Length: 152
Image (cartoon, rainbow, N blue to C red; front, side):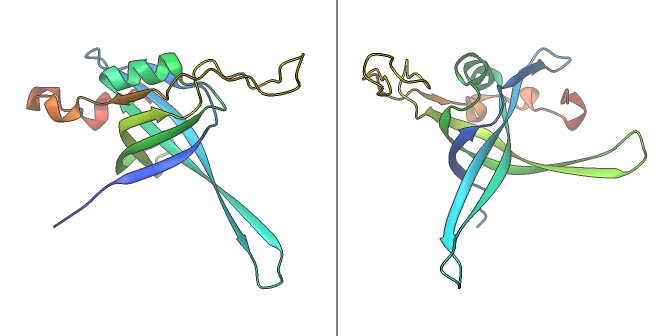
């Protein structure tokens, strides 16, 4: 039995970049930062930030491009994939990405990152988090994406 599943919760570090393959399939790419905290042997608090490359395809890409913004907190579920290519300098390069299959926006709809001038409190709407899923499992074999079709 094999399992390739990644689940992360973090903040988007840049607005999603939208592109399309030559065949017209939409793809969104963005990055999410996650933090890990611990106390070292000397009792000092430590922090390490990891940056994760995320790729979403088709309808999920459209939703990510429309609703996700830098700083948003988001849950991403997907699978790990490593691409390799030879750069213009002739050096082989690798990039590990999470191919998103599920996305849940954790910021409340309408949330302001600034404070309300009258109360000095963050403003929120009581809207539920938004969830989007990829149709990956519903696509046919003809829809398979080839490495050479990836526009970045």
